[in-house]
Amino acid sequence: MTHKLGEASLHEFYRNRGFSGRVGFGRHPAVLVIDLAEAWTNPRHTLGSDLSEVVNQTCIILQKARKVGIPIIFTTMFFDDELTDLPMVIRAKVPHVTELKRSSTLWHLHPALKRDPKTEPLLIKPRTSAFFATNLLSILNDKGVDTVIIVGCVTSGCIRATAESALNYCFHAIVPKEAVGDRSQSAHEANLFDIDARYADVVSVDEVIKYIDSLSGK
Image 1 (cartoon, rainbow, N blue to C red):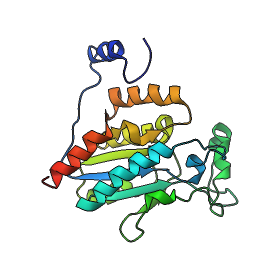
Image 2: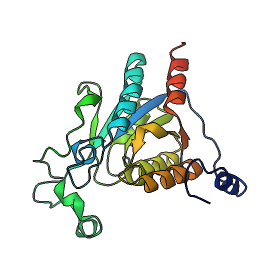
Image 3: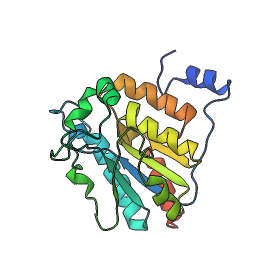
Image 4: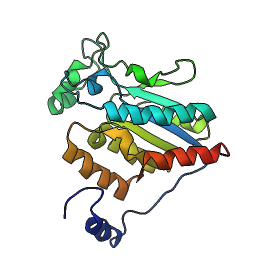
């Protein structure tokens, strides 16, 4: 059985063993835009790949969310130029993170996202999950959020980790499959399956748009 989202026999195998339930949408969503910055969206960089369609699909969701006043929170990553805040064990496991320095432009968000700095927080996360060592949970609690729509990159890393944390904190976690991406298509497919089986509902962007429209009474 191929380990990917559309493999019906594998889905059935997992469902029969108590996985792949549905959390559904709640009533008070926020959009989490994970790491759609230069380091990941520019193929010329070590971490980069062509995520142009992911950015496009994310912008569709953002446009809808902004119209109805849904909270939007962005994340990116960087460390001090001297890397004194980057533990040696992290450097050893993923040495590419040493390129993510404050003085570089690698952490700057993709311009198409058009973040509003007055209303849309930008969190600097030090690890894969957007919840780890950030004030994301406090922000979501303050806004009364019960549903997180997780978009961005990469599926096998920060998207998966953020979805896992979201479930651990009892949020309705939603991952629009066209609005997340990875430098490896096989890793993308396998992790979408695992996310859907264990941590979040993987749905289409169209489903997310319909959900947002339902909140606005359309």
